[in-house]
Length: 193
Image (cartoon, rainbow, N blue to C red; front, side, top):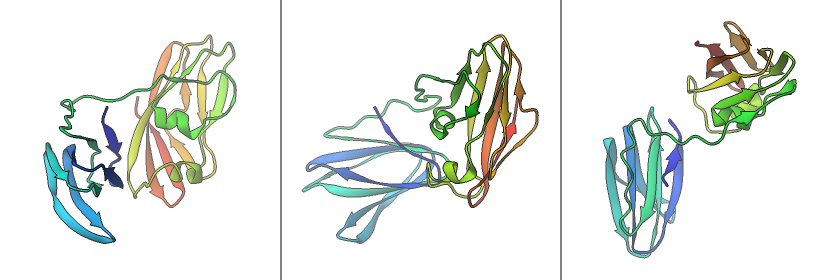
């Protein structure tokens, strides 16, 4: 299974002795090698898949992703499946009582609610979201709420995290949101459908 370097972030990957690393992105990713603190460019992957190595004695490879994520895998002959339209989705996070929405629930991408009462859940604070990844200004991610219970689900604002658009998700419907970094420890979630 491939590993992911989120958009506009970087990662250091340890490649074992005599192995290679394959990198795929739909945008661009700069790839370099760190040898005792000296960083040497290996190349740029642009809207394609490319393999670097094998590395005698192993290597520390640095991937700097562009505007879209970069996927990588290591091994003697690492192969990534075609990544176009492919995504990894963990099981949805169920929230059935009022309270704070965990940062991990937003990162997961799908929140379900089967509450027998209408509930309001507050968004994670801007500081909490900022600490989950290396976000840059205007980085964004999407998530949704599926309200399958008898009553709806309302999304509430929190410190450093506001909402634009209708915050209520009616029973039997889904609400889609895009959360954007607007400043240090400051995020805005937009209702997009």
